[in-house]
Image (tube, rainbow, N blue to C red; front, side, top):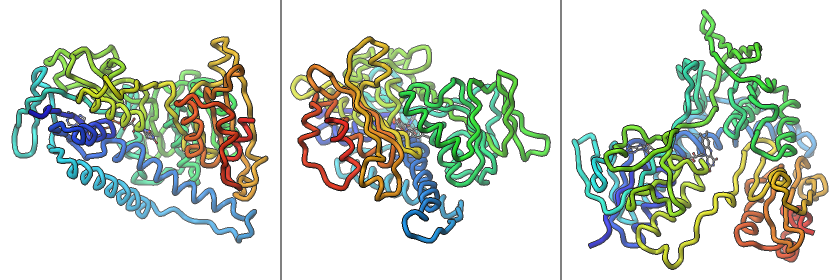
Length: 455
Ligand SMILES: Cc1cc2nc3c(=O)[nH]c(=O)nc-3n(C[C@H](O)[C@H](O)[C@H](O)COP(=O)(O)OP(=O)(O)OC[C@H]3O[C@@H](n4cnc5c(N)ncnc54)[C@H](O)[C@@H]3O)c2cc1C
């Protein structure tokens, strides 16, 4: 009899595990309470990047005078933008649905919880169904963290889920949180021409990133007139009596007043109400489900993947975990399985300039007392960057001075998210700088800067 594999959650982790396991011969059921594609399609990756693409088109149009064109000022139409985002997400959701359908995956629209180690109860619009599973994957994702002091109303006080675009375009947006999500929203709304204030709890935006990379973004924000409240923690949000302003109070006595406030202070896992205790699955103090390197929980046939597993909260990582889970469920790990190395995950920040990195960072190498070779090449030396009228940013490559093996890299500048793939491939496969230098790359192309940094 085929392995009965039940997956709770149809986001990147769940739907990748489903298609892969079905291809390998499992009898797969996916339970999804919202939409296939998950929060990634509905609220996170896709709508945010669609908004950023529109903002990018607007800011690019402000720079065209250097390209032999007459400047034109586009005006944003929030309804058209909303329609565009809905069309993109609907199309991607359709693709996921078709893929699952093609692989013979059963999709149940409803809310699932574990009743025991092998029993999953699903509440659908038609009633309650109980499924018996040989293996279960918990891939329920996460949701925005809302602190007690934040009176979120979806109108003036927003989470990221209210922002695509908000019912009323902010005149002045106060963003709380300067991690990846926070800075992307600062970039997005300042590109649209909104005034933006960013509350930065540390002394640097993107506190976990290379200081040189963070500085490049701060410079651009300041150039655009974004106000940075550094070293300030938000402790209160007070809507004005007239309802048209909101004030954010900070722990250092400062206050920032705007028309809207957006919270970007992280997420919490969707592990509550899932019946994990009934199945004997442990969660940590924050609600994440701890997993082994095979994504197995403390119960041998129950897996967790994606944001709920508390590893890197990235769609790309969730999908790869889902793939690894499918292989493990089907017993493939004994032969082909390569463990996921979270330290080698490439990530990008879709700001302007765009930022991407992978592997070892220069600051972490120094902190660990590790000898590395660092080379840095500015895009101002790239023919293609000049042709693009955008010579901002640089490529930084970290390699082992003894062997030449590429250990990591950061890219700041146009198409950084695409270009980092070359360094990611090198880091994952332990390629040497010479392997990049000796590749016959296209000219003129921004990727030539990667070869220059490898010299
Ligand atoms: C604003 C923002 C932008 C982002 N942009 C990027 C990006 O550009 N690139 C990137 O790699 N990552 C990005 N991320 C992170 C990315 O969205 C997540 O890492 C990814 O969605 C995690 O996938 P997942 O499968 O774990 O969960 P999700 O995508 O959250 O899917 C989980 C699914 O489970 C369902 N579910 C939950 N509980 C139940 C239940 N009891 N029964 C049935 N169904 C249930 C939910 O409805 C949901 O559809 C972004 C995050 C945010 C907040």
